[in-house]
Length: 635
Image (tube, rainbow, N blue to C red; front, side, top):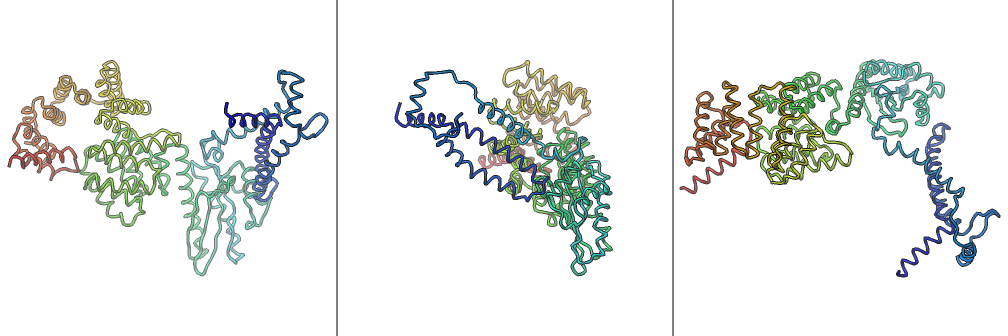
């Protein structure tokens, strides 16, 4: 054993012999308990706020003193004595021999202190709901409204101090999200302590809040300068003195007090209700929303987002439409509505909506403006412009998972799968830090497909399995997971997933059998099982011969996989006779002609498809580039 190690062991034994470690073990938890007690009694005894700070300084200064005294002195049955040197101590130990160590009083004291500390620390560590203490048992947010302070020189306006308090209590009491302590009980508790509202201290409000079993306070004032009257209100956590939000309204004279009271009450009501809704929902996507408008519109918006993530686009549009009807300035609701229309292949409704709201972009805050720029790029430009605006949004708010998803999806659309995955992984790092799950199902199956395209089947299976754990009925994830199981030569798992898919689509969404066959055809096609896929696509056409989309899907399969290109072109020609300008029909006829060597005709049709496309399509872009390159090589 080297000398350094011997020294370390010797020092450790000497600290034990001189009871320094035992002293620290008693001092540290005792100091913590004392701090907690001081923090509790400070407001109760109306002590100054710096009492806790002074206690921390004294305890910190006392720590080295206690350690030094413990090293020099020892408490014995005969009193306090200087600790013997190590040589003398060794002689005593040698003479007594080795004895089994007995429990001491100090052991019991240390154990008791540790138990008390654990009891005090537990709620601080494991209380994840920051507003738990603020709420009543029924989940409503508990509020106290204090009298408004008259900061004018006109004492005749003192009548408004309690008048504004009463008006606000009455208005806020109508909220289903709030539990407002009523005027009589609030006034009686406050007036029993002080009737000078300018002198009401944070400590007094802590006491009042404790008596009324509430922790959130609305404290306001009004002032006058010339012909302008201003009313301020703050939403405060009485326990920590944290100001959640500040509100201000302006008027011309005291004649505007009623209107000003209504305005500031509406601002507070909407803010608190939205805050409470977010906390109860515990969703990172919802919490990241910075909307400060109408709380009723926000509720509709939440229902719309849920429906959108459930792939129920019609219901999503209905809820989001209600949000916009309630608040026409709710930009995020209109953005989501445009995406919902697009997901239903209804760009006839989506594009005019985008054009209309895009005209208002210069009058909006920067985040709303960038959202509209991103939306406009999504429909009218390329994913590269989408990336530009999504990056700017991420730079503004790196904690918003929606912005990261938007950036990752833009990379995904141009087949930059590695960049897409590294971007989406930032979302999961955030949620791991927050100890939350990410609730956007789109990210899970898109990541699964990105891993699939890169051949990373293990990661593909993991992300899709996680997605199914969170969203067991999401049929997109079921489809991608079934494809993965087939590529892993696990037919039993694949059949089980397909059965789950059948059950959900038949019993919950009530889909026709033809649509189910069509989707199963996609599963087999993506897994490379072409015979099984062709059988399912033809079954869909047979079950619903009037459905032209199923015919087109069969044609795409026959052309993409070169199963029967000529038949695929024939089907497309029949459909073009009815829809001669449909971009995707032109796209697939051109692609089919390219595959059979008719390059010049193919280029002409692919260029026409590019002109008529509703939004950017990277597959069409790559096909056109490949065909034009072939033409140049032939010339």
